[in-house]
Length: 448
Image: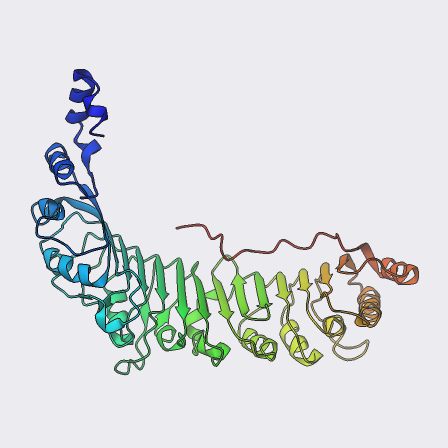
């Protein structure tokens, strides 16, 4: 910007007269910082501070702080712990226009050496703040009146500093929160909060990642209509119940979901519910082979009568009974995708009647079934196809003929098998290149 203002007199006058062009401060050069400070006049400023070494008494930062602290709109500070210790005491004057604040302690794995943020930060008044990111710092989250805060991230904070009570107090002081991310900052202690519920009325997305159980916090949060909850854990010793609220009243607004996604990817498992009134996603990193039954058992706690789509990825049900128990309530299910699951015959068997021709037809409105064989299906293929034919025949005899059956993961069907399937199903597609149902990506969420 300085170079452009030196092209000619007309350009100089045009650029200098617009104070909004001089509001980005990096404070790397003393002369440039002074020029920007003068030409920005009274406009709100953005300060981006990145320091690798010690902070000298002559650092250009001190030309801006504290003299122009009252004009701060966006502030991003990234520095080593020792440097942050020197910077933070200078951030004590009020910043009534501050909307974005990010403080990063730069990956210090010794929590006791991370800098501490106290209530003195900007005189304890962060009421104008909208976005608040804290990484590798220590904080007890004492701030109040976060009335305008919409996005909050706490990353790699010491569990000893953030208790359940303090975090709940913080959420209550920020009634407009739309996005919350706790990354290795899950509280694991604190005074008992029995019966306490905090309503996150504006929440759209909450992500909890770490190696501690998140249910201790989630038990006290009311997840609102339209919100998405994602919990991910890299501890193999935790159960599914450790990731989601133990009291399902917290998720009572999610009774109208229309799509369910269950994944067991070898090293992780995930539950995801999608619908007009809310979403739940659960990712459980574990190498245990018995994750599928607990997932199905947790699923049946919900009202799944309105679910229209169910996708199950790489699951390994040990028998037909957990599947049958989970599928029976899904009276409106229209599409089922079973992707690279072992024991595919269990799925086919579960979609038949519960007991003989007079039994209840499981998922009576099912129209589309997608079966994708695992890579190591081997000799199970013929057995699975026999079960699928038997299932399709039963459904056709009950007037519930499948409209579409897609079978992928094998080269081709035997002619007699294909003939039988087409007798009971309106449209049959088979082969290694059959297009399967669109797989949702949890990494491509729309920002709120």
